[in-house]
Every structure is written in structure tokens, then in C-alpha cells.
Image 1: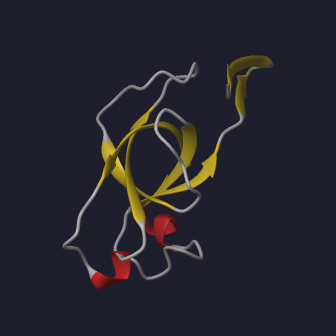
Image 2: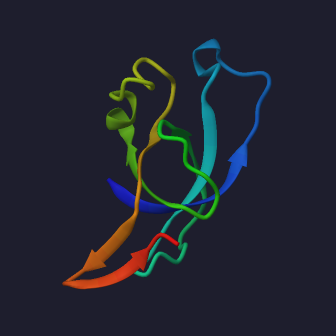
Amino acid sequence: MEVCKVVGQAVATAKDERLRGTKIMIVRATDSEGRAIGEPFAATDTVGAGENELVLVVRGSAARTTERTHDIPTDAAIVAILDSLSLEGKVTYRKA
């Protein structure tokens, strides 16, 4: 799993039938303080995440093992919305 920040949303009316009813968010990996780094990528949202939230993302075959993504053509899935993040005993992020 990796900590990412939701930076946008992708909307597609023409898509694989198995993706119907799913929300596709654009996320970027973050540093330990929750600041977005790296290149943005698309992830299937399984938990109702919104823009600017910190989330946990799984990639590869793990992205297709949730109840909502089983047998869906995705290689990244948002599986949790973070309330806080701490590193070495120091809180580095707390949801407002």
C-alpha cells in the first residue's frame, strides 16, 4: 500500500461495462507530511474519497481483490481514507 493524495477525478461515459458505477480518482504519492509528489495516476475509488484527502492505494493484483473491484480491469484502487498519519511517533498529518 502507498499513501497518496487525491488530486482530481476522471469521468468517462464510454468505458468497460465492468467499470460502470465506479468512480475513478486521480492520485499522487505523498511525502511523510502529506504533500503530493511524483506523477499522478488513476485509481478506482472503493471508499468514497474526495479531492485533497490522503488515502491508501493498492496497486497490481491487490487492486482487484476488494469486494467492489473483483474482476474489474484496474491496477490501482483506493482502499482507505486516512484520518491521521504519524511517522516515528510524530503526527505528520491530521484530517481537518
